[in-house]
Length: 263
Ligand SMILES: *[C@@H]1O[C@H](CO)[C@@H](O)[C@H](O)[C@H]1NC(C)=O
Ligand SMILES: *[C@@H]1O[C@H](CO)[C@@H](O)[C@H](O)[C@H]1NC(C)=O
Image (tube, rainbow, N blue to C red; front, side, top):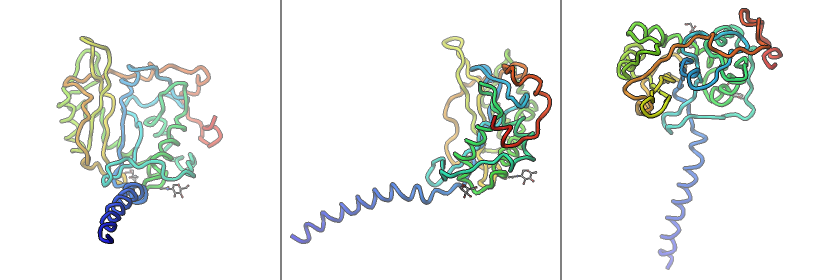
């Protein structure tokens, strides 16, 4: 009798422990061992919807930073929202601000200064990293400089165009030469049926946890979002919808403070 009830108890215990293990260690042992930088092509952004001129002036006519995420390759998950009392301060980034305006601006409408976007990125992901707020943003900026995508594509004969498409594998070869196996290409569809095209939308780069080096992505290459033929439409910042109240402030950059950025 006793043996029998014990043999029932053990599986129950195992079940209970498994459930506990499933719930808790994932949260408590999440360790960020990789950063994931996403660069977006504004020509495609523009093509797939309305884009507004940032209140801080025109962005670079280049790939822009979309975000930088924190990833744990042991659990295979992005690590998010680590501290509900996360704090973001623009004052910590004075030396980066002109680069942030150029390379990490928010083209969403209504026209805005990008602050909310930076804050979301920091408090959703950055706060889970091992880096300070300043270094987290600098790591993304550094990686976009390192990737040098427009130049690298150009050297390989890949230039934005409305009349020529490029082979996905040529795009990948160009990326591989500069960044090894650290990149993933994403496209979005445009048009339909015979007119359907896939437009290059994002280049993701797997980066070491200290933000310094591109590393091989630990997960499989491409979610297949690009056709064999990929379009890269030109982008020019004068296509961006201006906001009346930003007129005249386009050419100079005001001293940033929490107060004037919060407006
Ligand atoms: C995340 O936010 C908490 C609360 O503000 C802070 O104590 C911690 O140092 C932050 N982590 C990083 C990596 O800055
Ligand atoms: C970014 O690059 C600069 C200049 O090379 C370097 O001094 C800095 O440490 C880098 N920042 C990070 C977070 O890697």
